[in-house]
Structures are given as structure tokens and as C-alpha cells.
Length: 133
Length: 154
Image (tube, rainbow over all chains, first blue to last red; front, side, top):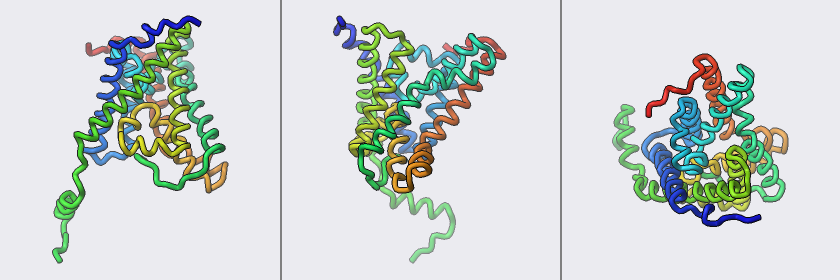
């Protein structure tokens, strides 16, 4: 396999990705510090916002601009759901609205479930209060 | 002792006593940790594209790898430390989503595998999935009705 490392470490792209991802996280941090919203609610707000912006076609611009900087934060998860739903509506109509979103993000959800089993099997329980939740 | 009679005076009292969270420092930490996680994602994405996967598959691979890494770090109890330091920087990227599935499940391991692990793992991630999936179905239906994505503001 020949990998062109110059393409992998495209510094301009990485910089845009870093700044965009960082700014989205700052918005989350401000919501945590300045409002009384619980982190679970903030996650829900981010995912729903991403889905709405993705449905309107606005988030696509951000993805084109920043790549993973826009898709890795949870807004990107919402964008992915909405994009999947729209794409399968184009293919199969109303059923697509129900299947598309989950189909597009199935990899992430399944991975989260699978790696949970892995973690529980291989690591001892720590009854510490977890962060953020 | 001064009785705190109304809600308002009580709230003022609480605000006076509770420590001010250093918001600038928090934001800075959230910025660079979040940016770093996204950059790692971008590097994985670029490698996948160089190997000839399409965009959709590459994105899925990035999600799976990042979730796997953060599940591993949660298991080693390292992710909590990162989370305490970075706040939203580790919560907002998809790694936080994975952590929110893995870590309640580990806490509730003592309640048994079926209800404790299987049921409690979605305490935090459940709402995200419920509202995210519902929103995507709504978007799909609205798209079906209006058959347009041209409501762009830019």
C-alpha cells in the first residue's frame, strides 16, 4: 500500500479542522459553565441542532470546510443522521425516512455497544463518580 | 443567623458562596483537547481516503476507531481524568458519547449483566439517540413533503 503522507498531513486542512472542532467544544463549555443545563441535555441539544442544520443543508458547508472538525463533534452525528435520512428518502421514499438515519450512523452506535461489552469484560468496575454526567 | 426567606435571596446567597469556575481556562482546555481529538479524526479520515475508501465509509471508520479508543481509555479510568481536565473538549466529540455509554455501564456492573449493564448503559446515551433519531426521521419526512434542501441561508 502506497500512502502519500503529504496528503495525510495536509496542514491547512488539519488547522481548519482543529480550529472548527475547538470552537464547537468552546460553545459546549460555555453552555456548561454559564447555564444550568445538564451535560446530557447539552448533548441532546448538539445532536438535534446538527440534525436540523444538516436537514437545511447548512452543515454541509461546515463539513466541506473543516472535514472531521465538523463531523467528529456530536453535531456531526446529528448531521450524519439527517443526511442518511435524506439520501434514503431519495432512494426509497417514506420508508427511507425511518431507515436512513440509523443506517448511516449504525457503525458508531454498534461500535459503542460492542466496545462497552469489551470494556466491562476486561476491566474492573470502578465505583467512582464519573465526570460530566 | 439570618434566615434566607425568599427564593431570590437564597439564590443570591448561593451565587455568592459557590466558587466561580474559571471559564477562560476551561474554554482554552476544551478548545485544544477538542481540536486535537478532531485532528486525530481528520488524520484517520485522510489515511482511509488514501487507502481508497469512500467518504461515507471513511467517516464510519473514524467514528468506530475514536469510540474504540475512548472506550479503552474509559476502561483504564484515564478518560475521566481527561474529562475533568477538558470538560466539553472531551464531551462534545463522539468520544464523549462513547464514554457516556461505557462509563454508566461500568458503574452499574454490580447490578448484574442484564438489567445493570444492558439497561443502564443507555441512561445518558439513550436521550441522544432518541432525539437524534427522531429529528432525523422528521427531517426525512419534511424533505419528502417539500422535496427540497434549498432552504439554505448562505
